[in-house]
Image (cartoon, rainbow, N blue to C red; front, side, top):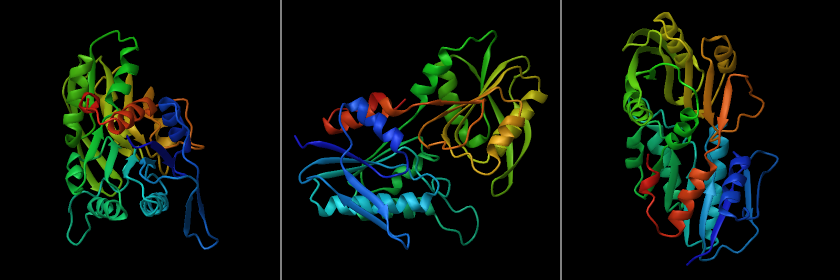
Length: 311
């Protein structure tokens, strides 16, 4: 069997090292840097001929910067005769541009899929895509995992005094919230959201019984936290007691941290698919998805089923 080698760009080195530790392997040696004019330079320092290579690189902010790193790393590995190249994308940038919602706008999620494929990627491993249909944008195999097992394990360890209600902050996330509620043994509610502009949302009303309940708001991305905090205020107005939020990808752009701090949310649970850097809040709890991704990498390399990880 081909040797398994993992490489990482600069997007999330800490997560890459945690995945490598789970696998009991060191990360492959490579130089991923930039010329004075900003162009990406990549050099692979070890033999990858005939190897099964996994490139760990979330395309998180700055998205274009990390996307180019990924594409050039893949090109270098392809030209070095790697047997198979799997792009491990804990966070898939441009995923929210998955369809035409206005005249004369791009479908950028499809364009990114084409770029990744054209660079020479043979397989994609990703986590909590904003829209499941993005898998169909690729003409190569896509393993789409969910952070649900990691999040469920955390919330099952918490003490719940009364009935818990899992809440979707918009209609598009109902399927995700329903699946989470089923596994947690909780009921379901939905916040009716009307978007009024880019990164702007207006909360209308809550559909479901939340008065006196403990709430877990489920979403895939927390970006500016506008939707999340407005949903929490609407839930508190309806009599919700403790309010938690669980979001896989912590983009946390703009004044997201300030909004979370000022909101009625007691705790926001996120994963480490995106490095937080200097962003911090006493309300933030970060869970690691390294073991989940590491197990998927091991099974893909060993040609074993990964279906049991698709929770």
